[in-house]
Length: 86
View 1 (cartoon, rainbow, N blue to C red):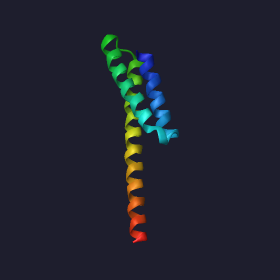
View 2 (spheres, rainbow, N blue to C red):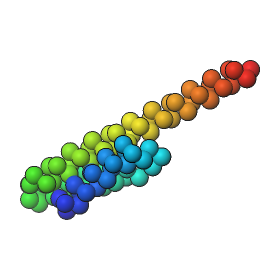
View 3 (spheres, helix red, strand yellow):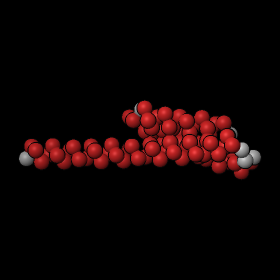
């Protein structure tokens, strides 16, 4: 489970940085990675489980941050266009 959490954490980081249109998928991978890392650390604490936990948390945070930023940007552009049009 530790290796799976590490892989999912890395996937969530890659999705957050390179595939901004799919941040929901990165957040989902990150959340599953967090759950797997916590379970792996309870069974047998290891460095791989800790690395998976850290990568998953950072990846999920970045995905959520980019989603919120894009949502705010779209709203601001929509408001600016509606003001410009009248």
